[in-house]
Image 1 (cartoon, rainbow, N blue to C red):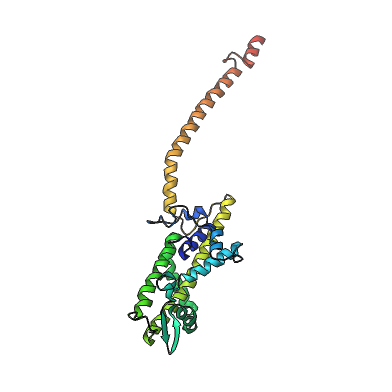
Image 2 (cartoon, rainbow, N blue to C red):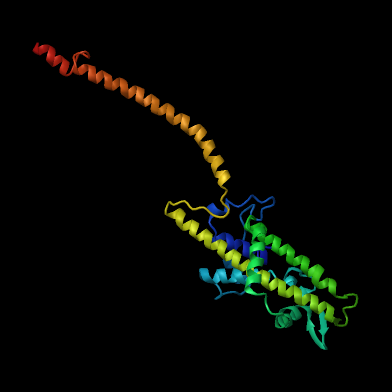
Amino acid sequence: AADDSILCVVSVTFKKYAHDAVLREYPIASDPLWNSESNFDWKNYIKDHHFEGLFGSVPAELRWMVTLIGDMHQPLHWLRENDYGRDIKVTFRGKEYTLLSFWEDFMPTQLPPPPTQVELDQQYSSRIQTWVNVAPGELFRSWAKEGSEQACYRIYAGLDLSNTSAPVVVTEEVFSRWRSLASELTSRAGQRVAFVLLDLLEHRRHKEAHSQGRGRTTRHTSHSTNLAKNAAIAAFLVPGLLFLFRWHDQNSGHAGAGFSLGRFGVGGGGEGAGASKKN
């Protein structure tokens, strides 16, 4: 992906505000997104995209990250072909749109009522299980892949593009499928934003504890792994300490004995010498 793509900007922003110690606790990715230092430069990004005035503070950068996570769930943003849908004309109920404007302007006004809070909580509890043990970069990449597949198989697949000289008719059946997809993606986007922000909050707490010399476990902490590491360290450290303590005890014991014997004239000096002279 290009350095200024949605995927890279979200990933770089997350990493900027994450804590390295916590990042090391995520499972190792088989194909890490951050296998080398990114060439991403905030100043160039702002200049190239004319975002002057938009950034300049931590809240502004995090708000932009949240916006881009939302953009991840607009599938057309992942397919550059046909200028992200701008070059395709569609008609629905007698009105003409570009495919992009249909999804970005019209579709949001047609969404069904959102799920109940109970349903949303159940969805989140279920979905979070597939997110929590994935490294951030890999997680964002999987969301990007999901979006591009939806653009291909759930949006473009519903259109007859054999003749693009005339607007493509969006049938009621296709509209119904798109409407369900848009509703699903809206809920998923909100839940993923919440997950990412909560994860960053945990990074911040861990960083503060680390700066104060306090340990803090996270949901990524593997207690069995830590136990194995401590046992391995103890296997080398404890025998060495025992040997050192024994050696110190033996040597300090001899010195002490010599001093004590000297007090009674055995050592030939100290108070013993004075006592011999007195006698």
